[in-house]
Image (cartoon, rainbow, N blue to C red; front, top):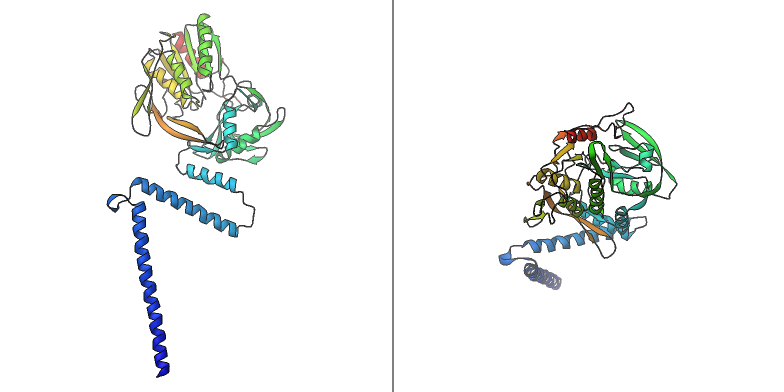
Length: 412
């Protein structure tokens, strides 16, 4: 009997402890549930969009912390926290799926700013990441550059640098290798018409002149713009004024393989042609409100026939200028191939640690509200370049089919 009583007492104690634990758990659950609702729920218990953002942020932080903990516990190699953080930020931004929005590390930001300067050491090419097949595409070759001397041309695909294979995702690394000490050589393997070609290119100091011009036959002013970097609008104005004073009565503006640049440089050039108050550009940002960029000055060029040369590498700010002249300057003819179709504008934000964030903030349209993004500008007269016996595009002034067509049009 005593043993049975002791057993009953023990069972009652265990039962009491179990019930107490269950009641305590329920009370604490209710308490924390109410606290959660108060802190993270909107009116009437429905989550607001801001609160969802807070929860997503908390979830992201917790996820990264859990990965960090596991890697610190299990990974046998060295862990570079700074590099991992940069990679995490890059991956987060890339998750947008926008090829133009990107996070730039401090080093990448420095390289980006260097590219906008008028001088650097390299081989003298304009490259882009071809998202379609993940390759490095040559969209332009600078005049008098080592790349041009070695035989590189627009449309080539760079597959290797110094015998190391690179894809479009590795474009930044490939560019770093092609830069270097002046006078040294770099081996660049390109793919052209299905054949691999090895080029030995000497790195040189490149003085970048983004605007060049000359007088052609029949008083035709030829002006080539290869990029819309700082000072281009002023350089264009000075050179076109000099050509006009020299007797030019017609103008060819060559925007082929011009991948864009600073939007205001392009709009300032359009301003030279359009009447004061004319629309140059229509932009639409996050809040769906359209904004107009209009001509602020009286034109210095009026009633002069203009041909704009374009091709598949004509993009962004170049398309803004071509579209503005096509829509609003009545004496304009577009010649060449349909342009790239980059109808979005990026804003570059400088971050406090020296890194940067480039964000697609606006989509733009021509003055007549024609969409450019992923569509491009179609030429009034479509012309292909011809190739010589070795498969090289014929770009000499006497064989350039697109330029010759422009001259023919202006002669009429």
